Image (cartoon, rainbow, N blue to C red; front, side):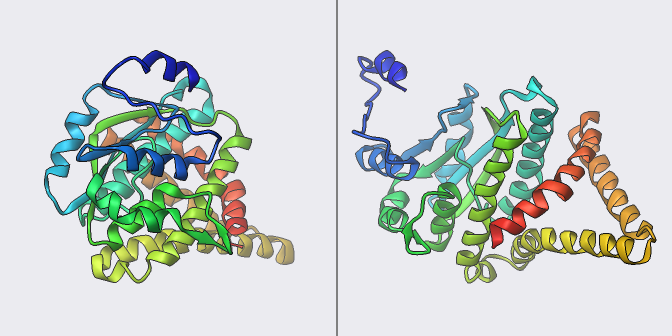
Length: 290
């Protein structure tokens, strides 16, 4: 960051803020927003590179005064590093072009992601005190900033949107350890802020309520299916072929449909992510919920 600050310090277009110590993402955001003067605030994570036309793609969506925030499409900047980064890149495509795209049809993207999100500054200014003073279990919250800020936008009556043509490439974990730690933070944030937003959902759309509740109930139900199958195997010595075949069939149908939509055969390989999901992410999400 010091190198970046020195490079742009003499450029009149930039105002570099150097805080006396590392106070975390949330307080750094708030300090910058309070010093800003434009109509829009673009949030970009430090490990992200934006396409040259991102702002041109995002700003038209913000011309509607009812829109408080909009996010772009995320890709893995280091996609070719390993098998894991390739899977994460596909995971990002699915999260953006299935989940966020569906939510955007109702003007209620539930999390405008940190790598590339634009906000209406006047809306942010009215929410900063709530954003800064969030507590969780009696302590100032230090995770889930993007999701919580999006929920505050929706609660204030603003729409949140998704722009698939605004591309942002971000660095993703290339090893399982960092990836699982990231997923743990995100799972904690999802559970916490979904609870905070439950009263909000019915006023947005019934489908959106079903979507969000399904996202949160799906992993526990899948975990229950897996545990039931393992119990059957241990107690009766019989393999739960029906449950196993159902999981395989649903995975392959999903990946095939995505491969057709994206016109990329690589998405058939995303079926391998099912093993990570069942044997690593499901226990991790249970731990996050606890």
